[in-house]
Image (cartoon, rainbow, N blue to C red; front, side, top):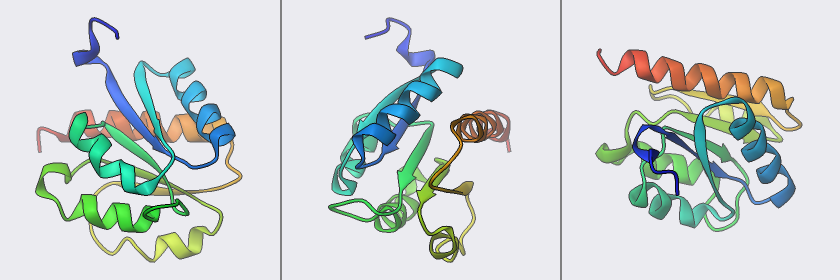
Length: 135
């Protein structure tokens, strides 16, 4: 709905707690020049990515439908979506950390996260991606 949406990066937020999802979306939108989209079910994430490729995915590990780790496996193994950085949110970061044997840019943030830290991480990940596309 912004006429210049082709220059506005999209951050896809996959989070089943509506309060947390809204908090993240507002925090990101307040501080960064990005659009946000929220999906509350892991099974909806691949469709959302197909509809509009996000610049970054904020992914809750414990989602209904497909878990965040299942979503990540699907996305990571699809050539079209390789290279989209993923910021995982999880109540048990040590469990998520074991899932990242492969390359790609991802970070794990424990719930209960500090919103400022999350926004900073998103900003850094988006920046890094812009620089690295030349590689």
